[in-house]
Length: 158
Image (cartoon, rainbow, N blue to C red; front, side, top):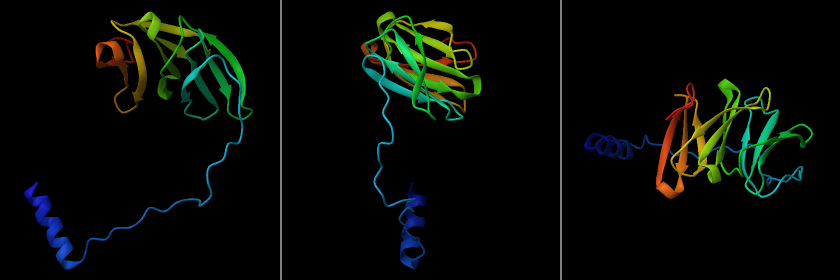
């Protein structure tokens, strides 16, 4: 830490430290380009690596929606075991993971077939999730347990 402070101090003294503002692609404000009606209480969105589909978790229904991004229309409602909250995409395995807090589980769904391929049972209600492609791990919050878990997605186990 002392070395970093010394390097920064020297850089400031000789005037070689430059700070630049990031370049922005556009100066226009974002705009809504399309709206799609979905199930009940949409709570999470995950996109496939190709960008062709988004999957939307519906907390107030026992389904998630597969939406085609080119037409913004629902391709299929995929029935899950309970209302879904969090959702994450593992593009390398063509899998969407859906948190099902009412049943203390996470469903693995194939984006090729839109079928549930596995259900991962947990000790508490899962919420938000994210997938790390660098190590193949799925991380999920367990709100009532005040913790997070990591799941090995090659075996779908803790």
